[in-house]
Image 1 (cartoon, rainbow, N blue to C red):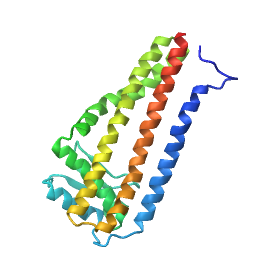
Image 2 (image 1 turned 180 degrees about the horizontal axis):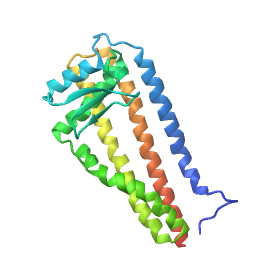
Image 3 (image 1 turned 180 degrees about the vertical axis):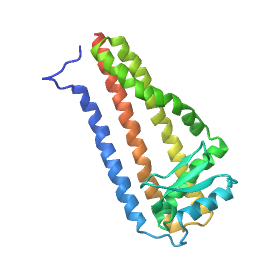
Image 4 (image 1 turned 90 degrees about the horizontal axis):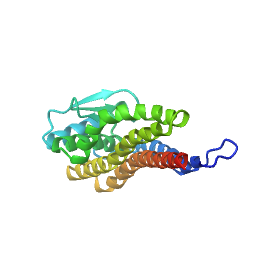
Length: 230
């Protein structure tokens, strides 16, 4: 049985680095976005204009662009083929605005090209939606009732971990496509490229933190499961 000290679970220590990384990532993306939201692009295009231009250049005229609420809520919806941009990005002419818009267009281009990691991730969504919600029920029952249920919970949780890991190449690739499209189509200057990259690298860090947290949680659960078998 895994040792506990005065009710403290020592495996929780495994989560501390991932938690610190998550806090750092959230702070980094907010500060970087806010910083470059005040740095206006020399070309003067809005995020919506940049998105429309890149979509059309890549033969994606069937993808619509909509204004959505919230902040940093920008996303591409592959089911309805709609690019949804927040107010700061849709109307903004800053480096942050055009960079985020181009990144989301990167996902639309991936979808149009049937980029395998994106297709694989999209196919995981319905499975993960069920497994992630059910996993902790089985995990709790495994601790309280019978160990075999814990193993089922871990297996279900593994699906959520896989989703987070697969998300990494999808996001990195979308950012790479965004930079290429912005520079190739002269939507930003060569000098602005490094600023755009800073915005997208900060955003990517949040996905790295999410994957790290999920992996460390899975390792922790496996350790706890094995300790109950001893």
